[in-house]
Image (cartoon, rainbow, N blue to C red; front, side, top):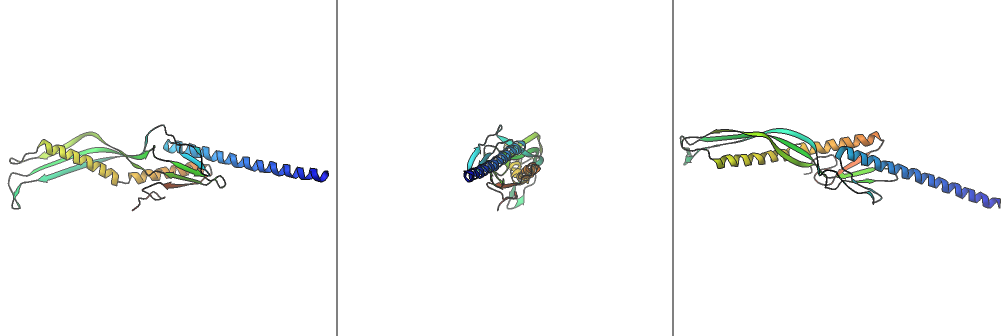
Length: 221
C-alpha cells in the first residue's frame, strides 16, 4: 500500500511539474505574441498574421490602407531646345527653348493590404517576420510649375508643347522617386525600429522581404 501511494505521489508530482512547465511556456508564448503585436502596431500600424507551429493565432488587420515611412521633397526640371534645319544646317530665327520645373513630394512606404506575417517558434520564441517590400506610394506636385520659354519669329512655342513638357515632367518625377533610395530607406527604418522595440523585451526578430529585396533590404538583381 505504501509502495502504491509512493508511486502515485511521484506521478502526481511529475504531472504538476509538467503542467507548470506547459503553463510557463504558454505564458511566454502569449507574451511574445503580445509584444510582436504591439511592435508592429507601433511601427507599421498593422496587426500582422501571427502563426505558431503553422496555427494561426491572429489574423491581419490594419486601420489604414497605406503608411508613408519616408517623405522627401525634390525639385525636378525638364527642358528642350529645338530649331528647324535643312540638310543639317540650322535655319536662322527658328530656335526655341522651353524649361519647366516644379517641386514634388515623394512618399515611400507600405500598402497595408499586402501580407504581413510573423511566425513564432513556441520552444525557442524565435521570431521570423515576412514583410512586403516598400513601394512609392505617392508623387505629388507642391505649388505651381515654373515655365521659362524662348521662342523665335519663325518657330513659336505652342500650348501642345507646354502640355507635353508638363506630362514629361510628371513622368520624370515618378521615375526619380522609383530610382531613388526612398524604398530601401523605408525598409531599413522599419527593420531598425522593429529590432529595437523587440530587443528591448529581450527578443530577436528575423525580417525577410517577400519580394524585391534581400534580407538586408537591398534590391535584388
